[in-house]
Length: 551
Image 1 (spheres, rainbow, N blue to C red):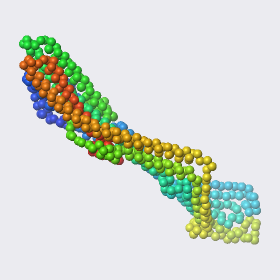
Image 2 (image 1 turned 90 degrees about the horizontal axis):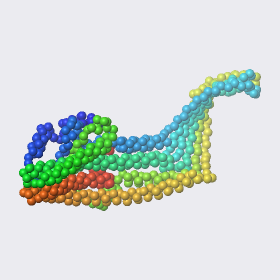
Image 3 (image 1 turned 135 degrees about the vertical axis):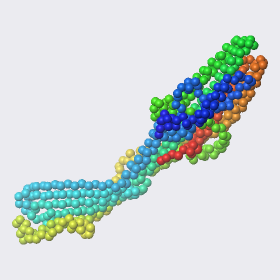
Image 4 (image 1 turned 180 degrees about the vertical axis):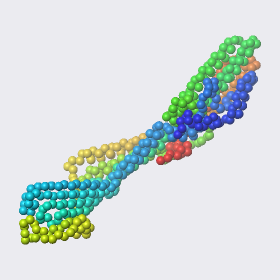
C-alpha cells in the first residue's frame, strides 16, 4: 500500500478533476469577474468548488481523494483495524491449538545395559555372571471424542547371558499391547471432551464479531472526518465570498466618501467588517489543515514526513437524498446485524457450556479400563543333558530369533487380557464446586449485559432515526433561511445604492447571509453523518458501504 506522498506521486496532477485548460479558463474568468463593479445584488452560494488561500499558491502537493479511497486506505492501513485483525488470527490459531488434544502422540525409547555379578547358585556361571540386555519401547496414544483414551504399545527385549542353563540364549521377547480407558461419568461424552475446542471456537467467533464492530466504528469515524473536512472547505469558501462582499462594500463606501455623499466613518465600519472576515478566513484555513491531519491519521497512521505535507482535497460532495426509516424496522435490523449483539449471545452460550462442564467435573470418576497383550518368545534354543548338572552340557541347538518371536505375537497363542474399573471419589470437592458456582454467576452477569445491550441498541437506534429526521428538517429550514437571506441582502443593496439604507444594515445582512450559507452546508453534512451513524447502529454500515471483509 502506498503512502499519501507516494500515492500523490503516482496519481500526479492528471488526477485533478479539472483539466489544465478548464482551470486556466476558470482563473481568467474569476479575475475578470472580480474586477467588475458591484451593481445590485451579488450572487453568492452558487459555487461549491474547493479553492484555497493565497498561501496555497506555493508549490504544495495535492491529493484528490474520494470517500471510497479514504475508506479503502483505512481498511488497509489503520493500526486499530490491523490490531483487531491480528486478534482474529490469534483466536483462529487457538482453535487449532485446542484441537491438538485429539492428535496422535507417539513415544519411542531404547536402552542397553550390561551387568556382571558373582555367581549366586549352582545354575549361575562358574566365575562371573554376564548378561547383555537391549530394550526397545514404542507406542501411539490418541484421545477419542467420547472421552476415551486408546493406546497401542510395543516392547521388545533382547537378552543374552553366560548362564549355562538358559534355554533361550540369546532370546527375543516382543510384546504388543492395547489399552483402552473410557470415563463413564466424569469427563464422559463429546461435549466434555471437546469443551476447550468449543470455547476456543466461540472465542474465535467473538473475535470476528469484535473486529467487525471495531471496523464499523473506525470507518464511521473516517466518514465523519471526511465530511467534516468537506464542510470546512465549503465554509472557507463561504467566508471568502463574505469577505469579497465586504471588500466590495468598502470600495463602494470609499467612492461615496470621495464624491462627498457619505461620511468617512462609514469607511471605518466597512474596514472593520473586512478585518473581521479576514480573521474568519485565517481560522478557517487552520481548521482545514487540522481536519486534513485527522484524516491522514485515520486512513494512514504510518505516514512519513513527506506525507504530512500532502494536501488532501476531497472530491465528493455531501449529497442530500431524502430517505425515510421506520423505527421498528430499524430496531429489528439492528438486532439482526449488530455484531456486538451476536457477540454477547455467543458469550452466554459459552457460559452455559461452562456450567454443564463444571457440573460434570463435580462427579466421581468411574473409568472402564481394558487391556490386551500378545506375547512372543524365541531365540537360540539350547537343549541340555538333563542327566548332567556339571556345567550344563549342551546336547542340541535349535535355531530361532526375532522372526519366530513375532510369529508368536501375531498368532495370539500367548496372550494376556484384563478388564476392570477405576473409581475416584473426592472426599472434598471445593475447587469443582466453586468453579460451578462461579460459572452460574458469570452466566447471570452475561445475561444482564445482554439485556443492557438490548436497551442500549434500542436507544441508539431511536436517537439515530430521530437525528436523520431532524437533519432533514434542518436542511429544509436552513435552505429556506439562506434563500431569504439572499433576497434580503439583494433588496438592501438596492436600497443602499439609492441612499435609502445604511452601511451597517448591508454589512449585517452580509453576515446573516454568510451564517445562513454555513448553516445550510452544516445541516447537509450533519444529515450525511446521521445517515451512516444510523447504518452503524443498525449494523449495516459495511454492507451499505460495499465493504467486503476478507477472512
